[in-house]
Length: 106
Image (cartoon, rainbow, N blue to C red):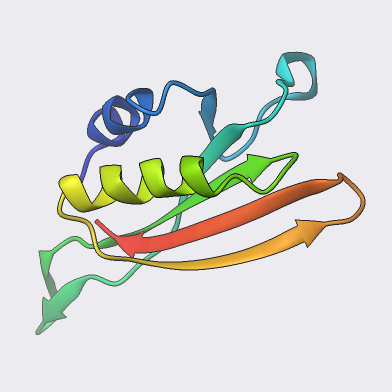
């Protein structure tokens, strides 16, 4: 499992703001920005023993305009790190933001 430090070091290479889970209202930033979190685990275990900790990592990329190049940069970074991912996207009407969600295991 990648550590918090390893994940944040990787995200620093994107050169956009990021936070774990959310930005507090007082530290709100303009898009683009990333939010990352570990919503669940999918550990490998047998006989009541965890042999390998596997966490699901979600990266949410927020932009005010569709940014294919930024998505490609993030995807290239994930591939360079040897991470396999799935991607979904949505437009958040209330916030007027695009959200691209990358889901993977670390």
